[in-house]
Image (cartoon, rainbow, N blue to C red):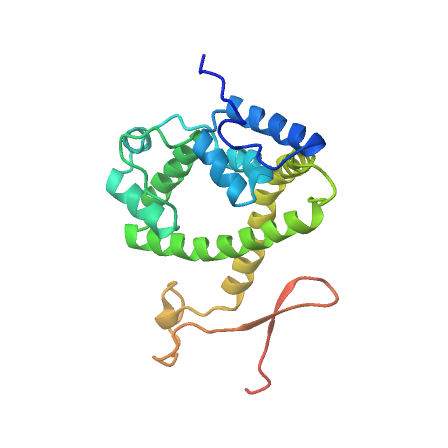
Length: 236
């Protein structure tokens, strides 16, 4: 067993008294039991995010694979995996570091499926960059929602940490289906209204201006149905 950590000696309980001190100590003990190191705890305290550290652990998953192992198990070359990670804006771990979770392996298997379906590496990298931009904006909005909905400034760190963790754990299973639903709606509408240049889909060839092979429709929400609809120009 690892040696117990002296929280006072490490300066992790400085300037705290009473309930605040007990709450911090209990939260730190829980995080240490989960494998969080002293330096990571100290950084979280300095940055004022100790209460959300349990959620960070929840989202990260348990590291069980090296990048090399993920490449071998998924059938995607390590070079392509590293390129994909860079395209979505995440740090690329050392190839022999145990830094990746089962979720990372599942993502690599999905990457293999995309390549097997005929997508080129350039296309998957570009798709990854597009997804990263959208997910970064969604993550920022989610972070703000957590701050305004789940954090009570009158509660202790441990109380806020418990509440944030419980709500995040309950809401996370809803995120994937919600994103899939919205994506399918948008893709359906874009396919419905888009015309492929030069009859690319095998139908009658239609002339489109070379400068604009793809239309750029303006989207709005239909007030009656809540569906995504396209504003049509009055010009014919």
